[in-house]
Length: 109
Image (cartoon, rainbow, N blue to C red; front, side):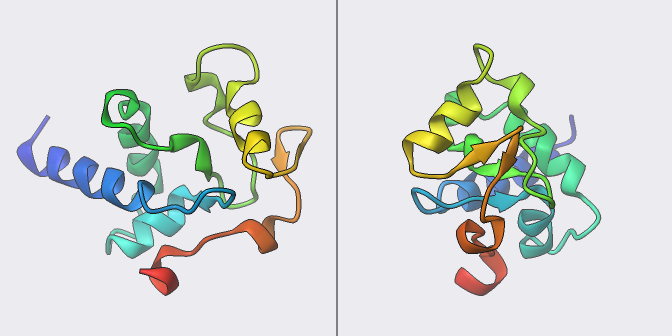
């Protein structure tokens, strides 16, 4: 990958590390914050490789609150279990009360 890709990934990790406990954000919200509004998918790619970076990637969902990244976590329901352990309700792979737990980096950072 190009060096700027790694820089983008590092920026994604830094934003994701600031998502508060018990809150979620979306791939697109991170992309918008980073000035790359059309790069939500790239944010997802960055988070796929974030295990060694100590990034709470389980707090990042799609724009509708769906746990679209759950297949990248060990075990069947680890992403859901991690969110629920933080008090985030999940039903049918979707965050409940999404508007209440949504954290928007462009407003918060």
